[in-house]
Image 1 (cartoon, rainbow, N blue to C red):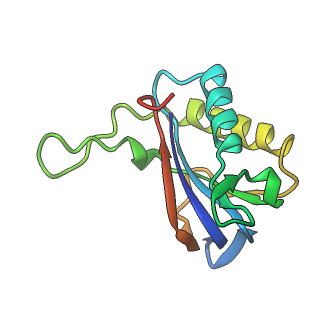
Image 2 (cartoon, one colour; image 1 turned 60 degrees about the vertical axis):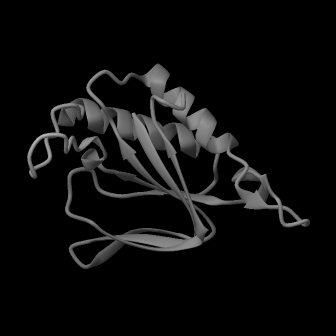
Length: 148
């Protein structure tokens, strides 16, 4: 599994010229599901993401979590996080989870996050999406197997 987490002032996702998800201060998270991923692995990523203290406190130190600042989540499925560019110039995606499994785990992640965070928006699995964001910092964190 791979999460690319961007701290944002606001973000939105559009499908077919219609905004389907929009947040203010919080995290825009691109989620890649791998072939071997499970709900137990997803739970670890969710815990780590929600516990990240990357918002500034009154002293300007990154010491506050998403919950501490009443932050929001925009979760976007992105299989291209599993692009393998080692050979040639055309990426291979053989390590990405097969679509049915990936969609099931993506939905699981969205549902679990909604149990913890009041405002959780999402993209449309498998759709061509346009994502707009204002990265706050910029501040981007990558969670993958090397970290967890």
